[in-house]
Image (tube, rainbow, N blue to C red; front, side):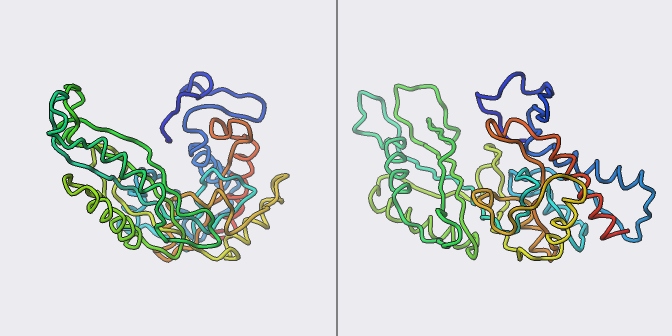
Length: 322
């Protein structure tokens, strides 16, 4: 489940229905998609259609941490000819091209000193601010004209204090360790090693500018921050692959929806997700899942889209496995 923001409407852990909208923390991303998978399997079982090939329902953890659950499943031998991941980008879209996600930390280590002797210290916070300004204005390369405006960098969290544990007490002393947690989205054909090289080259400039400090990039990030350490490179499958064609054909048979976009769908293709690991394991795959509507899209899901997704997946499973 995505972390909750301050603006979630109502009680986040109480399910509430308002017409076609279903509210509740985690429904958007992506318990609604999981419900659609279960609904499809239940419908298929109740139909009495016998399956000649196995249908795998896979519920994994750690997608936000780089897809550790899917990686583990693949290493355990779970595989398929095709897969549909019901990420919340609407049944109107079947996405096969997505950005890569590179999560890392920039860490500045300085020297603590009392405020009365500030000139004797090396203020890690002050230097980290300058490093982040440099990061904001630098051109990392990593461009693809089909994915404007990537690369996109977001400094998501900051922490500073004294000692390796960022002790927050003792504010009469300047911080000697400051950490920024960063999320970088980048397009194909680049890979994690290209991103690390680009960031490290940029930090070389910062190291030259601030030789009194130690400036490092940490990838993977310290586990205490719970942002994961599994690389999630771009996914780039053909927009006209067979599973996309099947979904586009089946969706209008069971709902009032039509597939309006396939392949690359911006800004939704800026996401990172488990399809990157599935596709690199040789599994034909795509994103197709229920979504909410504007406004407050990420706070609810449309029940009509959940139903459409479930019914389409049931037909898809019957076609592929029945």
